[in-house]
Image 1 (cartoon, rainbow, N blue to C red):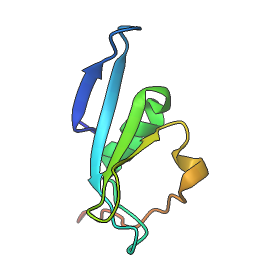
Image 2: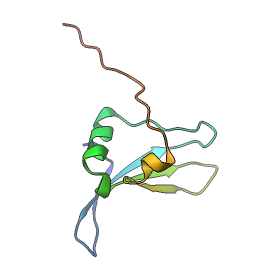
Image 3: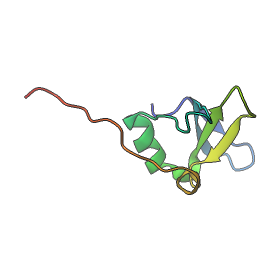
Image 4: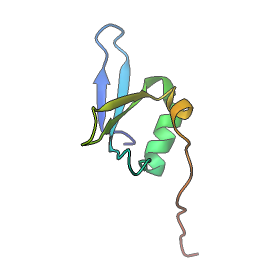
Length: 82
């Protein structure tokens, strides 16, 4: 689906997509799938990342602001036999 939870905001009745990720500040990054990436790209104003780390409070990052807080780097490519 490209997200973990689909929620409806009461006030606006708009759909919000929530992606939950384990995140280690020590590690400094988390990974998203290609599907999550494309869903986020197409819904930045309605997508939220919820990052969980055992060493600190959970962190919410609005899909519109993640690029201001993190560098997004492609890390894998799919290779299919011809």
